[in-house]
Amino acid sequence: MNADASGSPPSRGKSVLFCPECRFESSLSDGWLVVSDGDERTIVCPKCGHVADNRPERSAPRPQHAD
Image 1 (cartoon, rainbow, N blue to C red):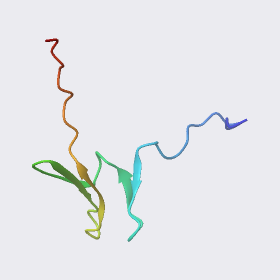
Image 2 (image 1 turned 60 degrees about the horizontal axis):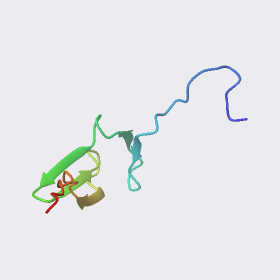
Image 3 (image 1 turned 30 degrees about the vertical axis):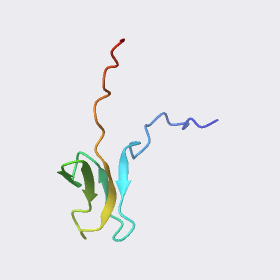
């Protein structure tokens, strides 16, 4: 069973990011630098400048029209 006997919630949320270089940890919305450049999104550690993630921006799905 995974439940804690004390009933207290876990100390970290599921959306916590970790920097492998300097061990900075925080939620994406609380500290990480997010840079959008055209079609790419880059997540940068605010403490050491390490690029933690770089990927294409998600685009909205295009509606398909019936011919």
